[in-house]
Length: 590
Image (cartoon, rainbow, N blue to C red; front, side):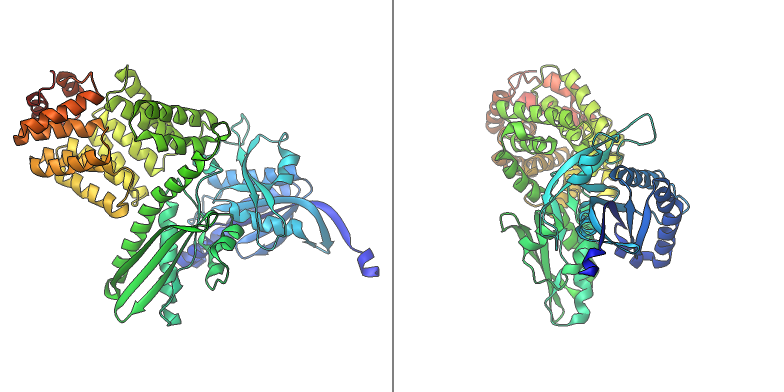
């Protein structure tokens, strides 16, 4: 009884911070990573801790546990260190570290210099919900500080945390731009509260030889790195999933512990000199598999085999996740949609190309950028919509709408200059609507340097190489897109580009094959009808060309060959003249 009576409690704001990707950094260069971490603590974390009246409770490897006298002090400290890291406050370090921070405020037990209780445990759990460079806080912290700091809070919802017996409501801190020292967030796409969250579990070794477990772990890390290049996904760091190497829990339990909806699981099996890799993507909420694949190859080409698997998974998963997320968004009432769900709604309508759907899609993209003006991909999708509005002959004012496409694409790049999708959209608009073909080719190369698994960038760049008069290079880029995402919803577009490439090369029979395939998949895509009409005419099938011309006019009644020839960006005069000649032969008005 005496021991119970001496227990001391107090309300404390507790913060837990760790280095994102620590295991990978240690593996790459342990000495440099340790030096950088010590320097970061000495130069930034601890001085800011003293500045805000905090106390260092514990250092454990790559993590620190700290206490503050108030929630406001804790959040100010977290914002200051993230700002300092972002501005290069420890620029002398060759290794750049990214930090995740979780903050909770709760009644805790004081045990000498230590704090004990749920308040500490919750802070140590919620930081795993943060991406590198982010701060997450509990609802209690948010309630204390919401009107006392130049910051907003993105609602991440209630999360079930490991060994915590109750759901914890979590928010992401979004520092606002002020005239003082707190800057606007540098990666606005990280504010999406509803991005598809994916955890890649360590691939299991089914071969019976424990010494071969390294291959499964290497596959896992490479897949995480590949998926992380996409700014459309929220990927849990490897050091948070390693503990499931010898897992007994099912996918739903693991997803709940990690705060994700999707689990990517897999296995490695060796038989003699052959390897089989199996992978499946599970929607843990609905407890169903949304994608699965098996890969077979020889262990003599193990690294090439591994690269092929990683590229295939990274390129395939994003469009599959978008399909699942779009179906979920369509179940919600429109008045409750956030910016991300507006983008999903817009995408679900965009490629039907019937007038009401297309108009509604543009409305959703416009609503998305109003709801979150700093959402880079929303601006990119709006730019893409204006691009289609103009290129498909739907615009009442093509010059003004082309300008809107350019402006929206530039805004996307200003907000996130390292997003491969945003760069690819901007590049296509520069090529298609501005005829800046060489600049566009350079932009596509940069997009693919940032994310070599971006099927959209590979496929859409093919059209620029057609315009440049380099059809075989265009076809190779398209093959890369199909290898990455064989069932991509953009395939009707990519098949149309393949048809254009064969047209430019003068291989009309092959061009007709691709264009008919695109037409069967999407019968309202004007770009397909234009190229098909000209190709059939030049191949000698005038009857088929006239029928294709009628299909074109039924969708774009105002089509005129002379107007089309003025803006269409084929660089080589012969290519453009052949296209115009074929359209005229089919009976289209000049």
